[in-house]
Length: 549
Image (cartoon, rainbow, N blue to C red; front, side):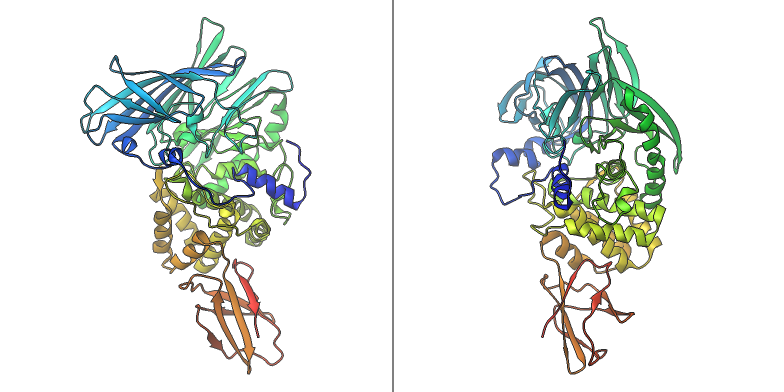
């Protein structure tokens, strides 16, 4: 995609990259939204434990055909299971223990009616055979589906990307984030002159009699559905071993054969990223599955242990600095941002996409922490504060629940600036680092809610942060420190905020710093001078200030 880059167009493209329309507005939700976004009774009674996914990729006709064997534990005695597979894909057959299972379709949902009794505590399997021509991604990764294209040598170049739209665009699954399989096998069959790269470790390559190869990949950790991917190309491969906090980590790179030389140079940032993020967040969460960076024909995505890359081997975001500070050109945006999601998205995963800020706010903040690790705290502040120009304050960061709908795109850099502000309130960087590492340890391989994250941070910092979370996440307003100078005294209060907002703040005036504890009621200070012009809020606090008469 070629776009003339100026400040506004860069951010417009960034919003699209985030999977968000630049003109988000309120909308009505239908039954399909509810079926996709809620924990329905047909989902709640069974616990997903394993996927065994087999796909034969017909590149010429752009068709997928295969089967998925789903292992699950029965939690309640029910007989009807919801499986998601979006049109125009179709389920051809369902079996359990050799018996045919009847099913019916309702839009993008299939209801399986089991003959076999589903007893509480049983571990069972159901095999779903399916086929079809999946939706083509028109603007990947901003809308989901498959990308079918060719490389510069006219070889097929195929990739999946489906965050938000859902993995059920291309394979049958339990397409809700609250429940993840404990492990997964992927057997992907492609033409013999190509390779498939998917998640986890490569178990084997099987030569087929029909001139194809099957690549068998194994994931031994929990994985979210949208993190599963297939990438098919004429790949070159190189690798290294990173000596990390938990020992040796396999790091693999898969790039188009003619890009290997520049990839070897650009990807030197990967061990730098791992070192910085293990410092801030704790050990890489998927040592057993390794870390891969895989070239794709779109910008990139956070597929678990198979991070995809299309940033044209440039620093910045397609060569541009989203912060305008200069620091954004010190690193490759896609390597750093998408890899940051291994901790916040793939390790700690939202239960409902309404809480998507847990992925994106922390990961946008990780860009700032990468800068901090290598260039210092002032540089990192320059970077995160520079991103404020991209914040629109159009709607709350948290979206509506149970309808598969995220909130405002401000979840990225408003979320990052909220966290930067909280770091300032904590005023102890080692304590703040222990909070970030503690999040990844406490919620290791778990799905979470916003409330769980809030409560953890409040508990570990010992600060009254709930009004701050409520203000930044649940409203679209930025608090304003309003003050007036009367009779050599200053009156001040928070306005444009929720009633309970009481965030401490630091004011700068004539080289001096003054700590205040404003509320929404007027307070006084005796530090006014007759010649006083105005206060200035310390830049690390994301708030506004206004003098009134």
